[in-house]
Length: 520
Image 1 (cartoon, one colour):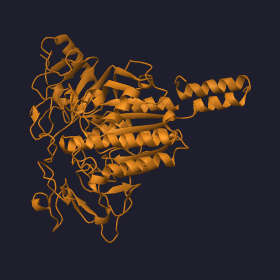
Image 2 (cartoon, helix red, strand yellow):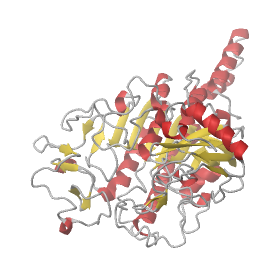
Image 3 (cartoon, one colour):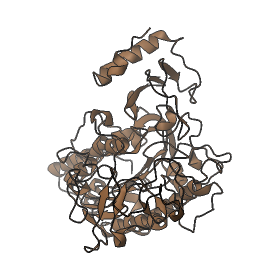
Image 4 (cartoon, helix red, strand yellow):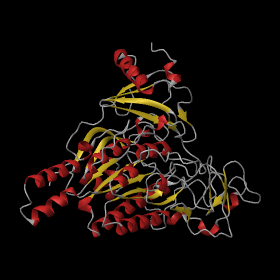
């Protein structure tokens, strides 16, 4: 059956019913099956690069389960996260809004207040209004509470107040405290006689740290990760108490997989939405012993293999429960790759011939392509024909596109309705997209990208990634120069002038540094 938007199917069904009675039970059953709402799943990786997936050209690592989604559905070659860092991308994914519109949409500490307003439209909220049961399993990193959380009581607001019926999360990142799971606002396995205390400003008296107690470490810190020690791993931030609630790092992938599997089994008889946010390959990279050493590239490679296995096991569950034919699956990553992101874990030393960014320049934190162009696939068994699409799409577009799919009239300022593109019926994606990296923005327009001048270092020395900063405008034709080696700003002044004008119109007065520069 060729896909049609549910609202069109429903209108056709009503028109048929108003004219004549259904001629048979079979006709009624078929029409109702067409109108039934599909399950929707977003599988979201953390720091997975464009070149980290074998379907996207990786030759030194094999990701067969991710490849099945890419090769069995649509593999987008111009699929983007909205930002080159995690919190802003997750904000855009769930709200359909550019993260630079919210000045607080930056990498958040574990004690940050909830970033998404409880009044704001979100992807799960829209789907909930359409009769979906909504859930998140995995990484959150969008803030909790009002910024002064008592971790020993119910935490609110949380994901449950912005559209999720069920949430089982880690508050921020695996390298930040608190190192506990939180389910529906409650810390899991918390002993009330051992309360949790968390601070990002000062340590608690008598608590060891990575900086002062290296003898207690099983993983050495390189930069920025030298505060409280949990499971031998030094973290960002300070934490005291909550011993019975602390997670096991090497079991985290299995833990979230089991929760995701349980979720779909429990809600298979109703339309459901699941945001399955894996923690790999973000630091600290702590593969289960089953995967340790399997990649030959150190823990980073190992946790990519682990994540691929998780995707495969999760897909097996969907198949066993008879859900694949009525489930749309989106797979992507929150930003591009980084090797050394705070720990000594051989990610650089054991990289070999693997190129996490593929043919792209830059990486996480960068305005160059590898910061935001990521693996992006859409899979729906028997509904989406396998194909490769060069259409320009962004994770931010899922809100309005899924709204069309399920019959909602939701329309958002920044999210574009690209349902026909995501279903493989069109190659006409976005005309333009503003990309963001640590409060800096650039404009992708057609095959071109324009990066305004920015002050600051050209390379982030601690992570050894080109940031895209330059004292001059940069202009690249990505169709001819995907690696962004040939700056065409000087040789194409009219194109540059037009893109700068369009960029300034979109950004308004938000980007004062760029507006103050004269285009020569």
